[in-house]
Length: 618
Image (cartoon, rainbow, N blue to C red; front, top):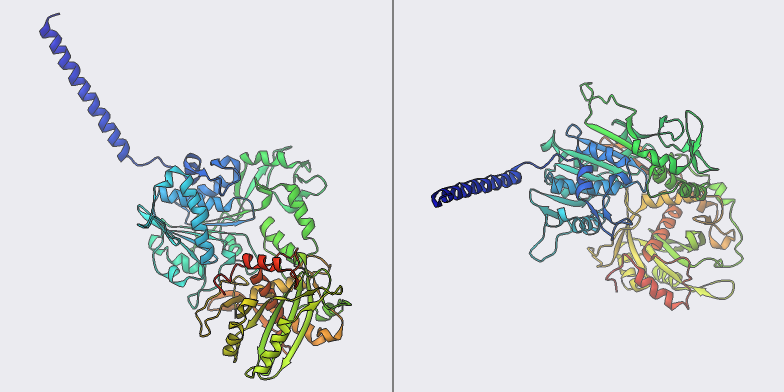
């Protein structure tokens, strides 16, 4: 072959090589410009999500097959035809992980304006800095998406990313709920939300209004364990949706059915088939979840014009389906709860994911009075801590000292009255003697009051502030009662004339707890004891006052809510005082398996370290 021919072939080869490289380059560019493959949330999680060892007992790559019932829920959230998804779910079924996967999906795959709504702002910010940021740090796909401030720290409230942001806020924040358009709302534990934000109205409805701009492409995900029948937001929203349950084939006959309490067999801890009657064990049933299907009991959801509407899908799931709970544990949980109204309420809400039906009838005060007992001492032996509640009236102070044993078994110690105008110093001097006194056990050992709550409402607010200001080191605090759905004790503020730690008290929450515990009839956990000795103050008038209110359902400004109303002709100071004493227990937060007696200085030091609300108080 001539040199000329060889040169010509070489030129042709170079030209072809350049063309191929050009083709390869454009192919790479087109790959970058091409839209991402269509993924649903479960597919995104299976492909990209990594579980952190900080927040998961099973760290590593996410697998939806670990809990197959989650797949249908995440696909429903991904479905463009569905605008609202309602999840009425029990504990330990992975509802928070579903919300986290949804967050990750929209941040990475479909950037949007997102609001993550929780019962309180504190819960929301803690969730943002722990669970959410753990997911971001452990998932490479998300790690560089969140925009960090120049200080090197991301904000607690807003996480920004290219194309959108996530606002983490609480149900009581009217400004956040009304200030900006939002495409995606994730509302967690909606039954624990404030019933109303000031005069703005229902929290969930207010949040939904923020999505109107994106109608047709918005996503509203409401998640919660239910609470009281007739007052559960998640239950009422579930009813207007498709009402879907997860059906699993029977290991024996293949008949599809859902896991329900009535079919649970206590003897074997298995589940009975409704068709063939055979009892199969937990492993066999759960193995078949991979073949399970979500079936709607209300498929013909109609819109305002009467047309079939698939925009609202609602799902119900109890703890029997959980990959992280055993049926044997559920059985033991029920056995512990049986006979205890408060514990049965928790079991019904969190395990069965059902609403709890409470009677609106008033408690029988005489029945509680008749169970009084002789203490034969001032402080019963198993009491480990004392708290006190104080109510300020125009002509007197009323107080109750309450003893607390292990598992919050409760003992009335002294119900007393200090007569006199609270504007006079001698009244407060006498109260100070009560609060600073050492109270003896039968063996001579002594104990002092660990924490006191004094109501600052009424006509003597300044006097209350002055009294507590110099006694905060003794854990004597001013409180302010707040109605509505809220925690019993919230973080204190000093934004007041007295510059003291003022604790907001969720009085309705306290009354719910007290009335539930008053119905417990067996001594032990949460039981209320009362002394029969007349000098201790627990007479007929006290028990009428303790049961002086009842819960009623009312509608205000179109919003259905539950309120506590005083029964005509009764005084409610005993109920209020027990509420304040319970709040004092929450503030002090003692370990009730240890005794906080006068000589136990080490235990007092532990209390100071454990205190959760009095940070910064001197």
